[in-house]
Length: 84
Ligand SMILES: [Zn+2]
Image (cartoon, rainbow, N blue to C red):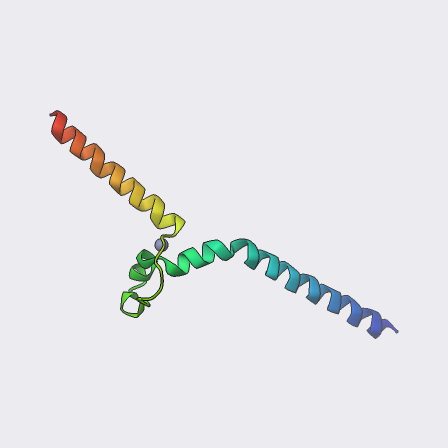
């Protein structure tokens, strides 16, 4: 009797764990696909040689922030050069 209860318990626990994993994956899916398609990430891991050409490239959040920061710095530099 106790083994039956234990097995039901562990089955429920396993189901809950799987459900949680599925929910987490669904939540993070768009971020994950953006990351997979980001050419900057591929270059960072030295995998640019294997980057599939037919993949429509998009940029991940981290590299988007980085590029925005770089372009802002360039713009500021240009403005200071113009001003002085
Ligand atoms: Zn990236």
